[in-house]
Image (cartoon, rainbow, N blue to C red):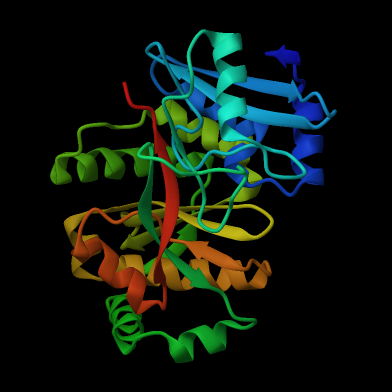
Length: 293
């Protein structure tokens, strides 16, 4: 079995990703961005099977453990499904250990087998995008439309976030993280690198009230999917329903880009899931692998 690790060039990786229509989270730039996380290394692994099938696998090493994804989804880049058991044996031969976890996108099955107690299901919310924004606006819940109009009535304005606004965004982000009591906070350098390396695949907007940023959302996208990735609010942002206004603009952008689906992601509570359903999203399942000791 021929195995080559750590030697895949960004050009070769992205060429394969383009040929096989891989998602954003399997891109080389995303893998390198994950190295902004504490104690994290990205290993772009290329494997070749006995039959000549070439497989590209993003592998992340953090604090001595291997993962198939960090933030977002994982998976392999290949022309057809492969054996997960074979993949794990190859990873162990290269690194001395197997992947400890892997989250796959909804409706993607890159492996021949995904069974056993190590495989579970995790929920997300998916919205299938229509051809026009008018169709989405007509069919979404009246609660979403009412919230958008309320934000407009409060004179909330929306602007794209550029390099010059990242510091202001990060102040809002830190306050939001403190308010919700989150255990982990991304660095400002992470967001800076996100904008620099993946700006062409990021829709980053802020809501402003009298020139003060009160809400901000970050969406990521590839050839087919639009990912709702970050949303932060100040008390004024929550009071004015600013997030709904940001979502309205974002969904209009996604439809103009001819994207097919919005992945709203996992919801930690019913309160977080509710607005996603207002826009028409439905609960779907993703396959999640966790290595048992």
